[in-house]
Image (cartoon, rainbow, N blue to C red):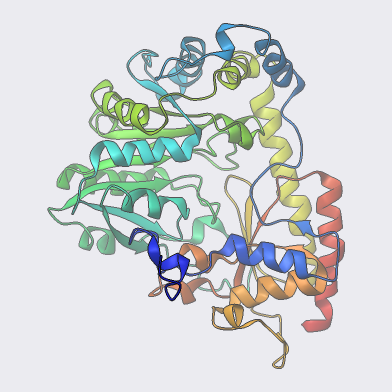
Length: 427
């Protein structure tokens, strides 16, 4: 080995991983460690600040004592969980969902989407993604060789000065169709949307669906926040049998039952599509955690009778309203979410000091990265800069916004609100 060659040069990473900017998560964590205000109130990442319901954690503990639950699960998922999901979703889809052929269990919704891309995307195929996007979409599409075409949601025109609805983030369907061509294989829809909180209206979904039929495009409908709608919610696959035939729906037991660390996701769709998703999943990780699948099955089986879905939605909407009260108090605009547990707040009125000592890797980024760093260092509140979920071309659309996750204990929300009141000195 030559002593003149750096060790890192011997094994360079694949091009799909090389040359990436420092990601938002590492920057936020760096600021959190360096902040003089401790402990940090973490309103950034979308993990829950409380446990799943006791009936579900009890089911997990009981499953640990069963031999079959401590061994490999069937690659498509434990039969009990598939049946429970099919039973829960059949009335929502308006048809009987076949648990054997139309449901597959994955290691989180993210791995499920990777499986879908691996199943259908080849080198040179194109996938349409709306901006802002869930950041994992990008690497998942690029891994099998896909090319991404981005179509931005247009922010509310008065978002810098007025409270708006997440529904005011709009899609230009003419721009969407312009992004379609013979290479377009798939489109990704996220409703309720992360980070915007938008629920695509039935008419918006129909306009997207009509284009997908016209151009023969597969639809991957990411509906992991489907149990947290605050306005009418339409599922893409319910628009028509024709649309259902080309739609794969993504769900998340982790999001549904407050256990994101369990990594239990599921995909539903026509048997001819789910067959190939399951095949890809088999080659990615073979199967998902058996014990937690069994507990998730109990979650679905008992949720309706216990009133869990309604209570969960009511509780989360209450958290949204509780947290946003501080922005009303401060006179800071925000985008009222129509679903999910993320809130976008607009910080255009905050005056960052001109001489503030941002580190170089933050100073070179857009204003929202500076706002995020500033909030952590000065107030001890972590929030996510949403330009991380944009391309270079469109990132300035979101430079005044920050994303907050409200899926925390009420006392944490109150602590965050108290600290955010400190923003008055910079307004």
